[in-house]
Image (tube, rainbow, N blue to C red):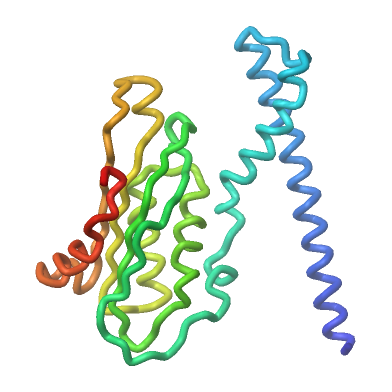
Length: 214
């Protein structure tokens, strides 16, 4: 192994150790916050059923918001390939979970995504990973939909990108209006999908039959 390679590995190990230290500090602070919240709710955070709850919640929140530490370069990992295919590529029924930024309650559903290549295609598994990167943050569904669409548009420079998302929001189901059957649908159409009704309708037809309601 070259000395430059050794330095690279050492620097990477140091960076990972630093990230772990920061993660540990964040976990401890999150645990303290949850411990305080349990107390303010009138419960005893030391009783058996709750003694490890602050730790569990801290770890869960780190996982549910792990999208902040992801980068598109890491996700794509050079999996973009030259290809002459010029019809719609569609991936349907991508399940996702996210947290509403207003109440920090979950919303969950499916994403249907399509794009029309302009000389480049992306590895199919990368598209659900892009969805997860943006979903694992504090979000609103409208922004989540557009962030996914514009991200794919930036990295692929295709003729068009289409994203349709359907989700149930627990902030509407468990509190507030308390409507359990409301389904929120959002879309973002770019390029040919926005300018051509025929192209947009073709994509929507391809998405048919994969609704959360079906």
